[in-house]
Structures are given as C-alpha cells and as structure tokens.
Length: 494
Figure 1 (cartoon, rainbow, N blue to C red):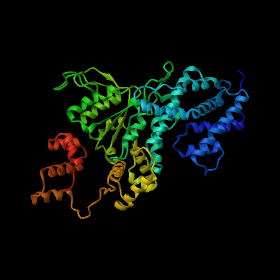
Figure 2 (tube, rainbow, N blue to C red):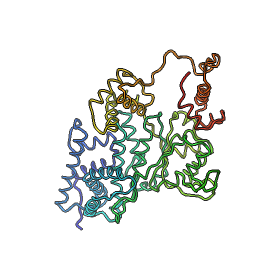
Figure 3 (cartoon, helix red, strand yellow):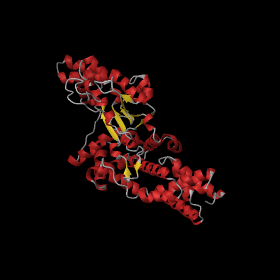
Figure 4 (cartoon, rainbow, N blue to C red):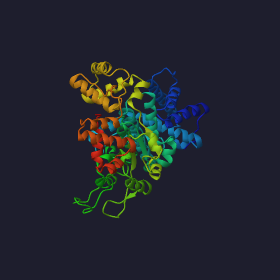
C-alpha cells in the first residue's frame, strides 16, 4: 500500500475533529470544537453546528478517498492515530439515527436482543477503511454504547440549567471517564471496579440518573447472530434496601439456600446473583443499612465475591454497583452514615442530583421543559394548552418562589392533580406553628389530645432527626425498620 500523510492544513483540521471525538458531548468544549470544524459563528444553533460539522468532515474524507488516501494503514505515527479516530467519527455519525432507532426498538422488545440490520453495512465501511476484524466488532459495540449513553442521559434527564448541564457532564464521565482514549484503551471492560454514590433529596431523580448509567454500559456484539449479546434492558436492576426487614435484607442481596431459615423452602438468587456480567445494580437508600451489612457489601466491592445465606460457598459478582441516598453530603463525609472502609470502597465517584428549586432558580424556563416532558409522558402528546393550564394553577396556588420540597416527583403529582381536578395546593408552611416538635408532643400529652399513632410517629421522627438512620431508631424503639420508615414517611405534625 502506498504511504500517505496529511499536509499541515489537513493535520490541523483533522486534529480538531480528533479532539471533538474525545470531548464530553455535554461540555462547552465540544460545542466550541463543533463550531470550529463547521466554520460557523458562536451564534449558530447547536443543531446547525453539529450538522455542518458532520458535513464538513464527510467532504474532507471524500477528498481523501478521491486521492486514494482513505485507509488507516496508509498512514503512520501521529497521522495514523488522528485519521483512525476521524474515520470512526465519520462512520459513527452516518449511523447515529440507526443507533437511536435500535435503542427505541430494543426498549419495545425488552429483554430479547434485537437484530441489528445495519451492522453489516457499518462493518463493511470500517473494513474498507482498513480496520481489522477484531477491532471492527469492538468499535461497533463502542459506537452503540456511545450513542446509547447520549440517548439516555440527554432524553431521560430533562433540563438545561447550569446544574443540570453539570450533572449530565458528570454522568458521561462516570460512564466513559474524563479521558475517552484512556477508557477505550484500558477500562472499557473493567468499569465494574468503579462504584458510584448518587446523592440528592427525595424525588430529585436519582433513580433516573442511575438507570442512565446502568443502561449505558459496554455490551459486546455477536457477529454470528447479528445482535448484541444482551439487551441493555437486562443490564440494569435496582433494589430499595429500606423496604426489607433486616432479617430478609441479606437474603435479597446475596440469596439463600433451601432450609437456611424458617420459610426458606427453595434456593433463592439474590440481586447480585441475578445481575448480568455487563450490568449494574442500584442499591437505593443505602444510607439506611446496618453496620454488619456494610461489612458484607464491602467484601462484594473489594473481592467481587459473596456467599448466599446458609452456605459458605462463594459466588462471583461481575457487575457494577450504583448506590443512592437522600442523606446530606456533610453526614456522608463526616462518617455518620458509612463505616470508613465501606465509604472509601463505595465512593469511587460521588454525583449530586440537584433539587428542583435550584434548577428553576438558575433557569426559570426549566419548569416549562419539565411540564412539557411530564405531560407528554402522561398523555402521549405535546400540548401548549395543558402546559399553560398547569402553569396558571402553579402561579396562582403556589407562587413563583415555591420550593418544591418533593422535587420532580412532586411536580409530576402536581400535573396529575391539575389534570384531575384543576387544583394543587402543594406543601405549604404553616407560619402559626413555630414551636418545636418536642414541645408539640409534650403539649399533646399534657392536654390529653394526642393519639398513640401520632405520639409514636412523632417520637420516631425525633429520634431519626437526631441519629439519622432507621436502623438506630429501630434499636431504640424495639420496632422493625419498615415500621419506623412508615411512621416517619407518614408523619404529620400534631
């Protein structure tokens, strides 16, 4: 093959494309690079800049083809490194719509892997550019992972306020690291070693963020079957740790053998056993688990092994752990929630999901975007009329500065309430009640007006506010964790 090289102007242009390929798509840097490649002014829209960017790269590559310089093996050294990424960038964008449709089709098909009808054409293009058989399969799987991650981070997490842009950028780094070249060369099949902790108030969307990570993992492509080895819908599972009593929690996590305890009539696979090799598990409300369970989870994270209840036989866990809690970050960092050894192994990355009030304060129009998304999800259609109707109720009943204590989950409830009965009152503060909960309970006892459920609920709330975990409250009161949680979640001031 005839040796080829890039002239200085080509090298400068394609180096910019190379940098764009590795840039975080949710970063300002990527937008600047797209504009530079496209030759547009900063005032151009994001859609316009990316379209023109793709067209310009395609035009430049066609010029290389006409000159017989469109094969990576014709180049050497730095030029080969640059042109390899440029060809991958070009082919990726030629099939981005096909990748998006594949994602939609797979969501409909759920756990049955969908045939990839455009795989042969894509791989033929890669082969024509000089890629070998082994790398073609890898780059095809990697391309789908990239597009799938962008699809879920972009579409499931609505909003463009500064704090949401920061969140999306952080989620991308969590999947691909800050350096995509590093990820591609060393880490694409080793991300299970990087556990993640999601922090945020109740209802902010931690579960949605976790699902975006969990469905964006690398899944190999099976060329014989012309489909991926697993559906990404199987690659993510979640477990709410607070919904199980302590006696069953370990069984749900690690499984149990027949006869391990009363009621264990069959062998049972826990969540770690059920997780696929390419999957992720969300352990929700991890801030509420007792100390001895933290120790067992530490072994899973450290040694990748666990034993079902009732046996010493070790099983291997190959997936990735994502954890979530609504406990304040200061409590996490001060050691009030986790053992130190468990914290350091769990928190390879800490991602904070912002409250709705912050998002709206930073960008008021974010409320409109969320209302549009929520209404479309409920009705299946975009409706300016319904958005305006809900906004009028919010402005009239809640006011411009309403804090949305229930966050996005409360906003969804607000939309349902308005659609059902054209009203929503929200969770307003009662300015007349300024005495503390402690005084209220004492006053209720003194006046003989407090009911036993209210007294127990209030007492549980006091203990929880002081000690911070359901486990500690359960030990002090003699009640189980589920009962404690029920009292606290349903608590209303006297």
